[in-house]
Image (cartoon, rainbow, N blue to C red):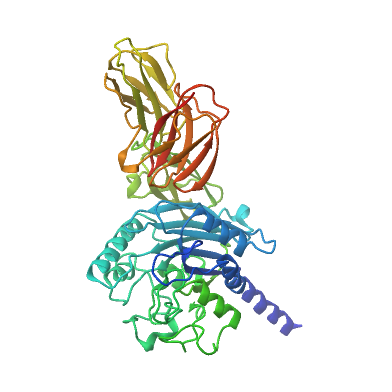
Length: 570
């Protein structure tokens, strides 16, 4: 009986040492889903979502981050036709940041994880996406705590020239400056196609040195490019000569794709531990240096998976696994509350922390960002992250960080019809964005008008106070002149086209830029109920058959700015 008891204790310790395992995958999907066909003798691979499904079925990722995703349709294809195929429903996609041509995307297993927030680190030529997730700890309601994971997905500048390396240097400097304003005690993963040829690349050095130095889990520095020493770690190219979807060729000889982790993950400082030996370039058995992935046999991976990897992309996915333990001490069971900043660039935010365990009285010490305040509620806060240390009467210490947000600044566009006749036939139409809607409008010169539009205006300057739901004000002074034209109605840089005009049934809207949103307004500012068909990112067909005779505005949001043009229904 004694021995049985000892065995039970040993087994119990083993089980409690690890509550969950996560598989994290980073993959360059190569011009997904439509491919490319502008690089000479090239083949566009069909049914790529089905090809990807073979890979994801094999890997069963919990976090899947991808770059070179072209459109929202690409995100939908990964989610619905690969990850959630065969009746699965557990995978969820993060919001797609679709500005530009090639983008990042993130998918996660909702049985294990929840997405708390996502952010964008602006850099050129491509943005870096930041995702904050937390584990679905079954004891969250008991311990008021769980484990967080932060994933950054990047696609750094390609190329082996000095200028390309300088751009990677600039991109990662921006990233590390962003990191400097984040809490340091986090489980962080840098994923992506880093396009680095050597660990001495300036852009790479930025990430693995300094106060927030990231770690290579396999600790393999060197000149990776075209070196057989690192053959098993190479991730590009899966092809030697075949030209699929305008991908690279030349065989396996570069370690472009990597996952770097924070020191916390290597040391298990915050309940997440890198699983030793789990890091791999999936599909690479180390025997295909400078050759095609499907040349000969593969000693480590199923043939069906290897062939899918070959046809899917010129890159291989990178995988690592981490072991997660859920917090088993609730500390002081700190519960946060907050009031975010009311107006952009304001400082009326507050952060409050409430201990639910421990023994009163408590002391509170906020960090320097909050001017070292010592009250339960930190006040006069602007946008940012604020951390507090709480100590109870028995010396129990607990920490918490609260992120204070702010609304976007209020911005507006004015659409002005001139008073050409001198008989007060001008008009002003306002389109407002940012802040917190709905908005109210006060026309100093027309007290009875509270709408976003005014008609029958004479030449002159008008004062309008725009107030949002938080009480933030914006005062503007548009001018009605006597020159034919509309302010902001037509921007030659975007080549906005409406045809036919006048139109009574269908109206085609075309521009040389991506249209992020579209709407139709009456000249009074009221939004009309109009159905539309999105033909391409920059081409829409509107059904205007329900509109009465009159003049309308079709509004398009392009590169974050609303602009538009008039059309007439005869």
